[in-house]
Length: 310
Ligand SMILES: Nc1ncnc2c1ncn2[C@@H]1O[C@H](COP(=O)(O)OP(=O)(O)OP(=O)(O)O)[C@@H](O)[C@H]1O
Image (tube, rainbow, N blue to C red):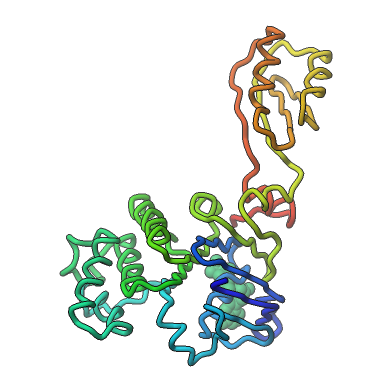
């Protein structure tokens, strides 16, 4: 276990920002913290880093209690915060060199690390630029390079893709996968469920400072009863057909409205094939046919009654 957060409570006055939060993050995973704005993601990260005092609970990182003076633990953590924090009066190269220098004093070693970080976020053409001359996406990439240049074992990224262009977004997501492949454990917070789906091996969904669902993506999706949804645009279905479709393995709900048939099935390997075979065998004419698996938003919607996005 790389991170163990137990029963964490954090209050801001009357507001309970973290309400007995429990998180366990294992070595080598990309762990997603997903939740709508204000659900407590940044507060959880700040407590984890001992940047914020909390009211109750305990935090262990690398099997050691985390305190504001746990410098040996902090040396092995890289943080990329939501707000870009670089020096406007230093160039791209100098910024990365400065932040790397907080951890690595050997100049030769640092030069290597800084160059690797620049290559990692593909900022080679911009090394002499000052931050005010960089676009939002490039600035975020610089922010990331500053956070990871010292090759930490644990990398924490707090919504690193907010307001970036699609090219930088892809660069950032690919970079995170690469970091993980090179051995870093990653904590990634976002309110974009697509990013969490794409990146993370396990996740926790937060709402009002509580974990409302956690596990692998499949485990989390398995917590709700929506199952797989198969949609068929069809024209000549009879009641008799609908009855037969209800008998197909895994089908638990069939609904025909105008020309759209929605079949809900429990998860299974050949759900769509079974439906297509039935359509072919019964000479049913159809337009579009497609299958949708539940999304993390469906999970959130079912548990909380509201959408993940604002
Ligand atoms: N310094 C503070 N003082 C008072 N309330 C705060 C403070 N920081 C955060 N909060 C409140 O605590 C709750 C959790 O906020 P937090 O920033 O941790 O959420 P978040 O999930 O990271 O949201 P976002 O996605 O918008 O960053 C929110 O209701 C927020 O308004």
